[in-house]
Image (cartoon, rainbow, N blue to C red):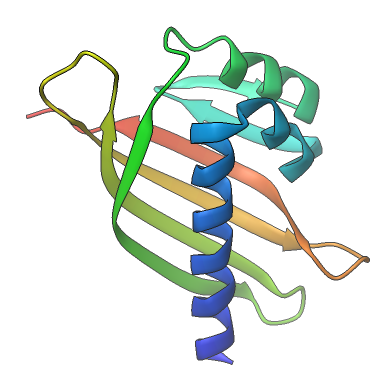
Length: 126
């Protein structure tokens, strides 16, 4: 079971950041009406508002470089997965990468996939 949790976490992370870096408007499909995003301390509720938030960030292009992915089963009865990501973000025209951490709480759907219930993003300064 642990291997499957790790596999799902890694597959999700690669899919999420591919969409973020290449097709950001498609990220809305990963969230639902009950989903919550906290981005640098600012809370946003629901797939539509999360999509607006992510698509109106002050940069159009970026590249995420993933350093670590840690995944845990959040509840054996529901099959949820908590995924913690650390890495760096390269913005066009910027010499230095920005370090970040992000946590996702994935919930299984009836269709056999997962959606993001909780998403917390922070830049790491210092």
